[in-house]
Amino acid sequence: MLSTLALMRQLTPYYMTTSSQVCFAGLVALGLSALGTAAPARLLRGAVAAAVVAACLVTTYGNARFETRGAWPFAWWPMFDVKHAPDKLVPLLLTPTYAMDDSGRFLCTQDRPSIHGTYGNQLIHNYAMDMRLACARADVHIGGAEAERTHWLGLSRDMFAKIGVQPTRRIGPIGVVAARPVLDQAPFLIPAAPRYPAYRPEVGDATVHHVSVPLHAGEHLVVSNIAFAFNYEPEVTVTIDGRTIAPLAEDRVAAVYACADCQPGTAVSAEIDVNTGDFPDIDMVLF
Image (cartoon, rainbow, N blue to C red; front, side, top):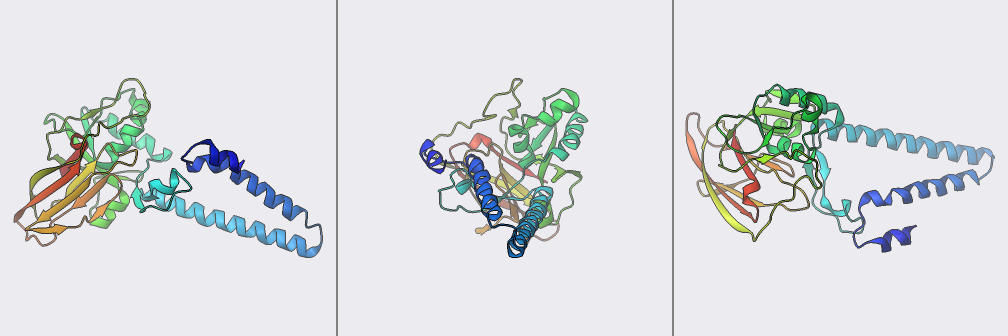
């Protein structure tokens, strides 16, 4: 079985190893069973069972915390090739099933919603199924800057906690606040019929795009790659007064910046350089 997995294709995603895990568990069970019925054998089997249950409880608790905070530790490698060297772990929000009803109700109460940030990325790859199930609509826009629409930014609870902001609304692990678009980009529209993949960016040669944004004290700038998928990430640099500033919080889709030294009532110019071959899918908002 292992030989077949190794030879089947060049890349071996994690989910293709599930059958091997079942067989390994069976081999361990057969070995423990073969020890006989003596007291030491029974004690060993009980200890192994207790260790397995304890490990299961610990990992289940850890997984629940990652899920409820929207901060799964995510890396492309070795997730999509178990033979690959480890990659950098960056948090990733995944919308759990228990949040789909709340998400659908929120979207359906809006006449013309436009969603930005990590929440928007989730709606792309979830086919806006939460909205479809709640009210048979899928007219939500992802990104964009249309003045007649209501713009919302959705980030993980974990990111809001790191920047010290209380979101206006909670949708499972997602926090939502009102947003003001910065760029005049065309929005992504949910297709009427499902297709796979949900969206594939048209990536060209990487070039640097420069944007200047007035940033007031207490405001936050969020730069998102709303088309995040398939291991393609832009390089974003933000400078204020000639100093490069680090994001206050970030995940695989979005990064939040602010002027930590700004005095109340003042504003600075945030200079943003984005090195990407897919600038139309870069989204910037203020909140």
